[in-house]
Length: 204
Image (cartoon, rainbow, N blue to C red):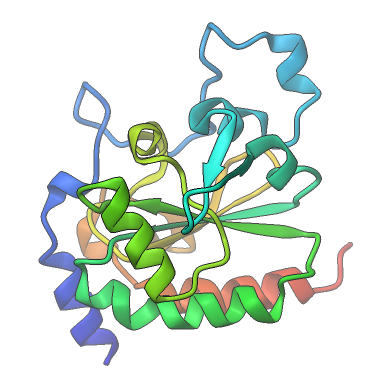
């Protein structure tokens, strides 16, 4: 089954994996836009991610929630690059939804959909069909997140640490997230499994 998922995912058009203008996908810690007040950024949890997403995240019913409030004090953020038209995504999405539901009261992480559907309506229908209770980046803002964190295809699950640096993802070489290398695709399942271990491992 992993080989099938890998083959399908690698066949997805690279148009859904935006890259920076110089043709390289950035994987280092995001740069805060010049328009963001540096003093305010330092006081906001996941400030760099908030600056890319904007003030609001969207739910399947069209309502919005505060990005800052949703990410407040979260140790990890799971970015789920996905789309309703993607067969491998539809295979994995129920597993992520189940995990999120089982941990809906968890205070250490948040899950956010970064969609590649062709319209807001399509994205909302995808979220509603699979009962995604976690929010999505507004489509008009999704490109900001994709340029920084997306890989060459979907589904792609990326784990960010408290500094908004990728520490795990569906493209990986020797334990390091390598989104530029399409042949390094391992799929979202190993990432989700690793994250479950990561968050329960004793600290120190």
